[in-house]
Image 1 (cartoon, rainbow, N blue to C red):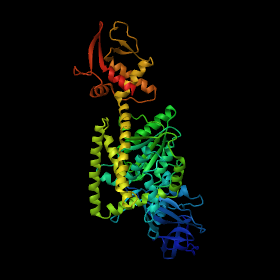
Image 2 (cartoon, rainbow, N blue to C red; image 1 turned 180 degrees about the vertical axis):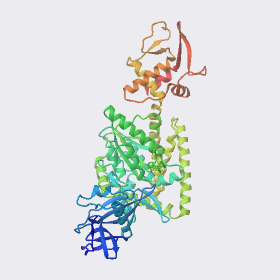
Image 3 (cartoon, one colour; image 1 turned 90 degrees about the vertical axis):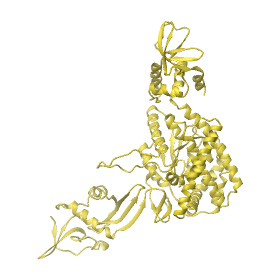
Length: 596
């Protein structure tokens, strides 16, 4: 134990007198002060004097946590490097060993860690206090709404890692909005691409309020196109409404893990993000990227995350995605009917972009023009719709009515066009139209668009979305297990991996690869054997086909692909002298699937 009589302190300035009794600074070192009859003595705890420089409260959108910036000086008066320590880590001293050099050490004193920790905590009263938001988007603070992004003049917003390119503007001018209105007429990006992307951009700041009325957007916009179509460049341009992005520094990619993407997506509330470059090559990479895409489709398609437990077996707050996402891909991911229904596909082709005009807009975006447009838009929303509680309630009610009207109209339009659609599609189309409608209203109120022009532009959006909806419905249909089964079964027959015997030539010995019989009307399938063969065929190709034969038979019956006059999906029939149990697949319907 290192005890000494009082010594004159070195010139450590603000460190003198900051510790609570019995801790004190002595000769530049944190010590315990002991008062005896013979005088005051000090027991040294360490050869430095630590203190809390700043206490930071972090709001990540789900819970409040604290962290500390700890600094100080060593016994020679040298400034110690600042260390960021979570409140839970302060209870242990590993942070000191990990961040400060070996010349700084704790003395051999009973319960020295407890004493040093208590002494450090006692300096918190002198530390600066700071509140930090670790998420973006709308936040109600002291009764008023603010749209949070890094660079906000009033509140500190800190995003980590690859999310640091998100940034807010703090001003705007009319010239910026004139450029924005030009997106509606210029075709430097084909309107079939730019209109859905603009819809998504201006929909995204409405996520918070659509969630509150039960209609949160639940889809991913998939930018689809082969190498050279400049998908990443276009995605970066539209992300530049929320920061400064290029095609080489998009926030996330399929090289990241699914969990890290979902975790980051929770912080990106009410803003747009991009997961770039879905293009698996080898079998192992294909499986990994496909699994990631499944997680993303579920995360953004359900706006839900897996429940997790804390160390003391308490349920953690879930952290689902809170914004919207663009995924760039060279081809549509094979994630099944349900997964594909959570995507909205927009196809790009090489050579479609007007590169000189695109370069000019990119330069404007790099200078902050698109960020200033988004600042103007969120300020408009805040002042017009969120000025007070009464305005907010009216806004929520009107937003709910608008969304539900658009959804009903889209259902009617799809039926009128005889487009077979998944139940999710009208919801997606309604969300996109809501975003576009608010963009047009914003431009009209700022004098950048006339009402009759706005109506023409909205009609054009409707045409574009109808065409994309038709293609989307085809993609979902093709990913149905029934369609996959039929296509794979017929492909195996075509390439000789399976065979069918004419029903009128049924006394021959059946080969081992035989799937059943056929005539002009039916394929008479040995259903269990054919299902098993198709499943193996898919696995050999690196594709999934996990539906059971029982559920597949039920789906084939419900979709009208098989004859169920007997009330069963399969039946016993005689072929020559043999009795076989077969499934009667309508030949015309199956061949039509194969020809799509």
